[in-house]
Length: 288
Image 1: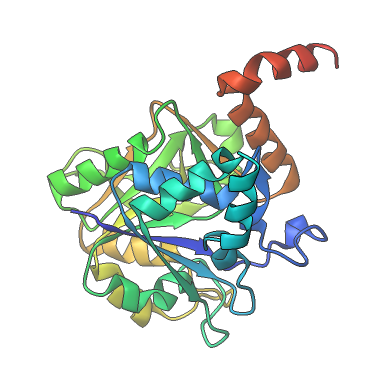
Image 2 (image 1 turned 120 degrees about the vertical axis):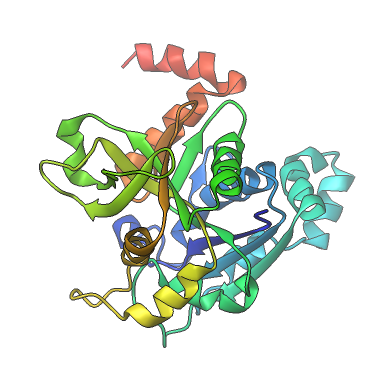
């Protein structure tokens, strides 16, 4: 059973400068909620209550956002506007959040947050969620719950989230390599970055369920030739010596928010998926 999740939120967000000069890119909003709040809500909906957010060592803005503010709550109560904090109150009631800085002693790379969160992870298996990626689905958390169910059913070394994409777009993404002699459904032999032609049309997105084995792999693998500590390198080691499973998303859409144009597209897709915004936005788009 997976009861812990780590969210990576320690990047500098250079593609969003200058707007994120003074606060993390994970707080850039998707409609009325910061990007990272949507991710936290997804994780809670999937049944995971213990969440660790790994953030930049010199920035406590994410922790501040998720911390109750009595002064603000008093003001909203007096003005009958507490409903604007209802979503955060739900998070406070239903989860336990920990905030861990990613120290400067750790190498650059998307596997370093796992090392920063090693005390939180302990000896448990866990979900690993990249802070740039969102899933738009009718029932938030269903896809992540589906990945957990696959992990519980087959007990692999990891389950990786993917979305099937057109071949022409695959050169922009990492892709899974299907196993030639699978022992479980959707087994993969490797993950390869931005290949043309790609080894498959299943692009890797930022959701993973990992056995605790990966922690020893990360600690021992060292940095890559480009001086980064890659999560995918650890997954490839596990796939080579054990079992990795690809779980494609079927009832949802993957949206990455790592740069301004894709962030804008994510806002539009989320708005079109919400009844309170859909009609108004569609009417506006017709005028362009």
